[in-house]
Image 1 (cartoon, rainbow, N blue to C red):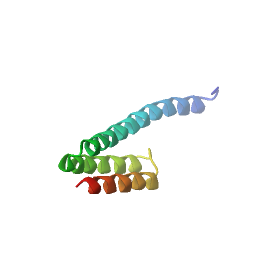
Image 2: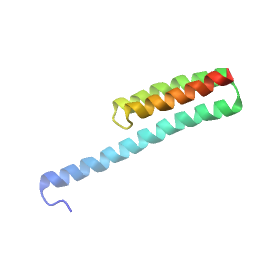
Image 3: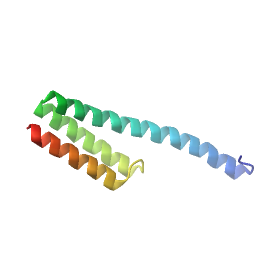
Length: 87
């Protein structure tokens, strides 16, 4: 348990950060899910648009520190190859 005022403040900041990061991660997953659904549906143009939106969202997650750069790159690479396969 935090005893010093600074430790208490850091605990409060961590709680707020955790909520923000959880929301960001959830938003990224939603964008990825829309790409998956478009790929499953087989609609090439919808999948390309969804992929473009998901890529910017993934990179935003990287810049905000929610996700590692290589993880985002791997996800984008795999998704783009799947989108290319249906197109």
